[in-house]
Image 1 (cartoon, rainbow, N blue to C red):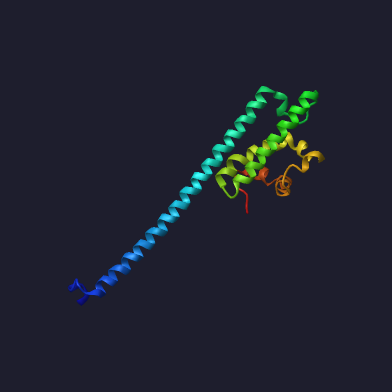
Image 2: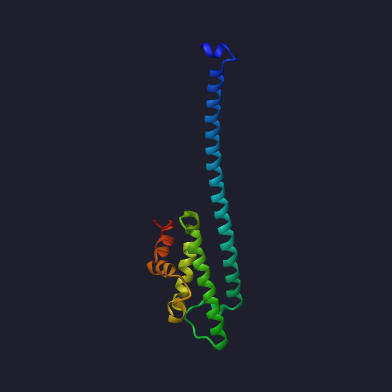
Length: 160
């Protein structure tokens, strides 16, 4: 206890400095963890908002032109062109979901049922030879695997 009795002792200040550095390091690590968690949550919210906005626009188009929302009906020439563009937009949206969901359980729980529903309506378009080159191989693998349908039904995120 000699060190504490003499405030001018350099050893005491060395001990206090070491303790202060340790506390500062712990606080910095805690702040970093909090910052990373906060960033991840903000990014997830941004992804959700972006996907929600994109899907809203697709649904508005389908309301304006109901023939767009069915994959297997007979269409006129103009309707065929409209459907081709719409189906491409839907599959781009689904690919965006695939890209943004990653390992986010919440995003998967929300958007995998949408993938399942849209895939059931527009799968034939994706399988046409003229359309296969428009999407990445990894995306085609994801659709072929169909794990989104199982996970949508079970309400769980995919196992990675």
